[in-house]
Each structure stands twice: as structure tokens, then as C-alpha cells.
Image 1 (cartoon, rainbow, N blue to C red):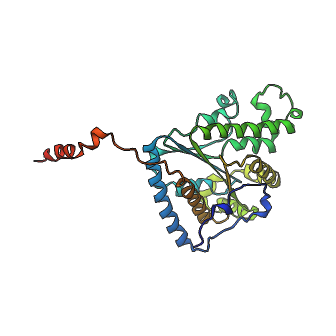
Image 2: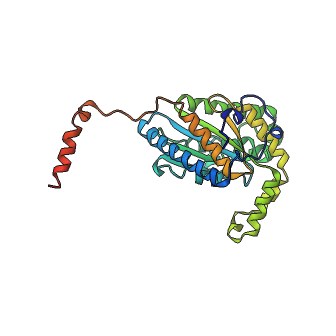
Image 3: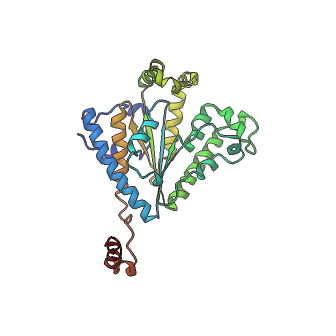
Length: 294
């Protein structure tokens, strides 16, 4: 099996999505990919336990991609061996009335993981430069001062929004949140096949919405927005990784491998040492418990 090299996926300079492959199999069979993921997620689970005990960092994992790119199943499979106390998943939908009474980053800020925990944003704060950019009329519902009509949602508006997102990520990273952003790069043909599957399989029908077809017609617009967002916001403190998503099993291995390799670089994440007065008395504590069965 081909080793997952981080440099092959991390965005460090300007990119064009058309130059990135949407398919990868890592030179492995499905069974080999399944076994590899099982091994990696066990290691991630161990790291999560240590992170929880260490209690100084949190980890934020952002997942973005076109509809049907595999975000839900990736969350289910990659984080299967995590302690449920140590990971929280948020899936951001259309803003609620309460959320619209605050600035657009508020609902994301209050959902950030606490120290020692992993947080997964399944769709993220980047929806605010993706969906709203394709449908700028949504911005009017945010009641932003100075934005009275669509003509106010201009180039400088988006420039400010990219800056605000970069500032948000810079702030939380400087305060102990490790940020990983994954774009699941799906082909338009693979999306078509997955939508058809939702229609053909009765148990998958509930996943389909006519809106999926409306948004699919805007494929190129979304692609341009993703490209610009990635180019403007991939920073050393909050890097983007472009992951081929046509092969779900390989995509899961790639994401899991990148996480494990990067997290292992934080050598200061260690289990806390026992206080001296507890450590020197471990044997006596053990003897006290053992005597209870006599």
C-alpha cells in the first residue's frame, strides 16, 4: 500500500482544483484499505485519550465538500474508536432565528471543542463564503450594518469575510486549538452516481432532496468558490488538505493518516504525571484494595 504523504494533499500555495485528482486507491484493495483504517483509528483513539488527560489542546476538524462527498460516513468510520466523551460532532444547517440574531461566526465559536477534546464540523464556517457567495441574497437575512441590498455584497465584503475567518482561526489556534481542514474533492460524475443510488435504494430515499439537483446545476460556481476560499485561507496554523473523494475507503484512510501523522508531532502531549505523594503510595493503595477480598 502506498504511504500517505502529507505534502501530496496539503495546500501551501495557490491551487486550481481542476488539477487535482478526485480518485485515489493508494494501490490497495478494499480489504487492505479497511484494515489500514482500523489500525490508524486505534492509534487516533489512543491519542485522543492522552489529549483528554493532557488537557491543554483541543482539535478542530473541518470537513467540506460537495453534496454526497462522503462527510457523514467519514466521520462514522474514522472516529469509531474514540471515547464518546472526547469527541463532539456539529453539522451546521441553515442558520436558525437565534443564530441570525448574532454574527455569522457566533454559532461556530460556541461549538468549538473544549480543551482535551476533538470537535468535528461537518460543514463549517466556510459555508459563509460558499453557499452565501453562490446565493448572495442570503446575506441580506443576516442584518449586517451597511448591507442594505445585493449591491453592497461586493468584492470588499468578501475580502473582509475571508479576513475575519483567518482572524478567527488565528485566534483559536494561538489559544490551543489544532485546526485541520479537509476538502473532499468529488467528481461531478461520481456525485451523479451517488444521487442515483439514493433514488434507487429505498432505504436511501430519505437522503435525497430536489434541492440537490438545483445545487448540482451550480457545480462550477461552487467549485470556483471553494477554490478561492481554499487559496485565501490555507495557513500554516490552519491548513487545507485536498482529499480525492470518489473512493470513500481511500479518502477515509488519507484523512486518518494525515491526522495521525500531524498530531504525533505534538510531543508535549503526554499523560500527566502523578503527584509525588500519590506515586510513592501506589503500593499501599493497592494493598488496601486487595485486603477487601480477604
